Every structure is written in C-alpha cells, then in structure tokens.
Length: 511
Image (cartoon, rainbow, N blue to C red; front, side, top):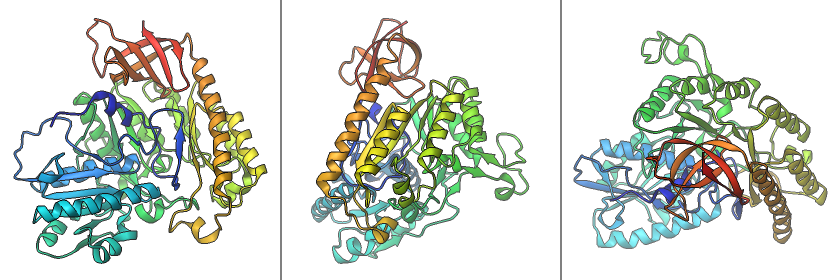
C-alpha cells in the first residue's frame, strides 16, 4: 500500500500534547485544524510508513480512536503482531485479525466503535475464521457486553495486556473467548520497538510513561490506564537516537502527565550493568530526561505532552530555556478559572497559583507558546464561575485552546459524586463565548509574529497546495511558505519570515 499524503499525515503531528486528560463528549473545538482527538484520523486504518520486506501469510487490520497515546499503542501492537507472523493490511476484507483500538473519553468514539463492530460482524460471516478484537480503554468497561451479550468480538485486550496478544489469538482460534484487561503497575513496553505507522518520516511519538495518578473528577484515565509508571530512561534515549539515525528530526515525549516522570536506575537495575548510555547512579526526573534526549543531536527537536500545572517545575523550564532544540511550547490545561470549580474537579491548584505558574514560564522563556484546555458548564457552574474562566483566559493570553462543554462519562468521580445540572443550551452558549474569546486571542497572537523570522522544520506539503511547504516553529505554530528550487525536502530546517497570518496559520517566505 502506498503511504498517505504528507499533508494528511502532517495533521497528526500537530499534536498539542494532550493525552486523555479530558473526559468530554461533544464538542471539542480548537483554533487549529488539528485536534486532540484528530477528527481526520479517528478510525484510520494503519499501514507501515514503508514497504515491509517480510512476506506474511496472515494479515491484521487495525483502526484507532481517541488520543495520541492510543495511536502510539497501535504501533506497539503492530510490532507484537509482526513478531507473531502477521503483516498489516488496509483492506479489512483480506484480514485474518481485525482490531479496534478504542477510547472511553468521548461518547462519540464509543458509538462509532460499536457501529464498526456491527459492520465487521457482517464481513466475518463471509470470511470464516476471521477474528475481531477490541483493544484499549473500552475493554474493561464493555468486555462482558460486547463479548458475551452482543457477541461482537472474539478478543478483548486492555492497554497493559498487549504482550498477551499471541496467546489470546491462539485461544480465540480454538473457539474460546479471549480476555485480558488486567492493569499493571510495571508495564511500559520499554523493550518493544514500535512499528512506525503512517509516519511522515520527520516527526515521531515516544511513550515515556503510562497511567495517571491524578484523580481529576471528570477523567476516566486512571481507571482505564492504571497508575503512573515511568519507562527506563535508557530505552527512551536509545529509541530517540534510533529515530534520529533513521532520519526523523522531531520526537514528542508522551505521557498522561510527563512532568511526573521519575525513573530510578538502581531500583530497576540494581547492578546498573545493562546500560547503553553510560552509568546512571541517580534517579532521572523529567527535566533530566529532556536534557538526555536533547543531547542526542542539536538537529533533533524535542517536544512533550502533556503537563499538569501542579507538576511542571523550574527545573523543567530551565532545561527548556537552556537547549535550543527543546521546543519552547507548553500545553498547560487549566480546565476552569473558578477556584470553586477547580476544587470540584480535584485539580489541586487555584487560579492564583496557576497565574503564578504562567508568570514564571514567561519570566524564564518570554516567547514560550502556551495553550490550554477549558471546560464549559461543569457541574454547578454559575455565571460567576464562567466569568472567572473568561477572565483567566484574558490574563493568560493563550496562543490556542482546546474547548469543550462538559458531559459526564461513566465511572468518573464526577459522575458518582455530582449532578450534571447545567442545562445543555447554557453549556453551549458559554462554550461559544469561550471560543469567541480564544479566536480573538489566537489571531492577536499570530499578528504579533508578523515580520518575525523563525526556524521551521519542514514536515510536508501544505494542505492547500503542493507548491507550498508546511512546517512548525519552536512555539508549535503552523507556518506555510512557497517552495523554491533549492533542493529542500521534508526534515530540513529553514528560516522563514512571516508576512501574513490567519487565526490558525502563519504565512511566510523563506529567507
């Protein structure tokens, strides 16, 4: 199968670092064409970035839904299946295995997955022996219903159980219903090399930790992905180095809350012998990991997502400021500007504390790009609470935001403790006010860049014209500029002077 258009692929890599921290249904709006749950990629079937020289007698087909962690997990699953003798296909009708990598964060995703499973059941009737499996965050909550009651799937596997796939496939082939949804306190898949699927060959995601310890009342992630555990720093650096040597020029370090990354080599390897990057005799924090990855090469850009305001430290900010190739961009979800609502959300900070953190970021990195997540209409929200959110947005002057109205999800603390009592129409009207304010701020932020020159990493063709390149600057802003006969290609760096802008895109010319 030929790889997809670089333009479409580029949409994925406009990630603003959000990994399932929100637990909303509809809608999710932002001020760029990419989204946390990239609507251009929901349900996308995967194929490898290049032709696989190995001939496989059996094929698997996989669709992914939800956040970027799910898409990264699909690359791990692909690696495990390759090792088990299965090659990937984009044609579901020739697949021996069909998997949906699912998401419980948004109701729409669950509805779509259920519809797809029904469609696969029809295909299965015409293809005896085909197995259908459900992976990811829906596995635990819906396993009995989909496996036993509706009989839509043969295999159910949770996010921490992908290593058991070969055994589960064997059980399903023998006529058994195969299930493993156990969560783990240790699993990080550190030793598995992901198969880079649908990559533009320039940017890649590297998972550094799994799970979340933050019990935000609106979020289901701690219940679907388990407790936090950090991956071996040595394996992370090795993977990033391998990507760089393969031609990639940007890595995004992924985690539900990357700032709480903490790995102790003496606990995981008491003798500290199996070490490819030098002896480590002290714990590695996220700031230390950033510096280790940045040291691979000045040509390798480093991004990360996502940060919890309570955990991002001066150590991290100083590491960013001290390395040109660590991008100057932070996604710092606020969720609400009201102290009362923040307490109900269990966010563990106040608006005053959050404002002080914004001030500190701009003190250390005056030009740092900052974005956020904002929820309209959380339980008991009043007009005064809503006004506090608008006021905080104006203070922070976000470059962009992901904006939702609240809708409770099963299993969350909010669903158990609070009544979803804000009328839907009121939620929507408040969301419209939030969106309008962010539109104005996004346009102003881009207008402030007119006349400035930025170092841009070329990621592919512009969405609108193959005669233009598309790339991003350090602040995670999309820049489009005309191509010239100068031998440039994807993965090259170029200086671009900004001439025009919209609320979502900078438009410039190469220097």
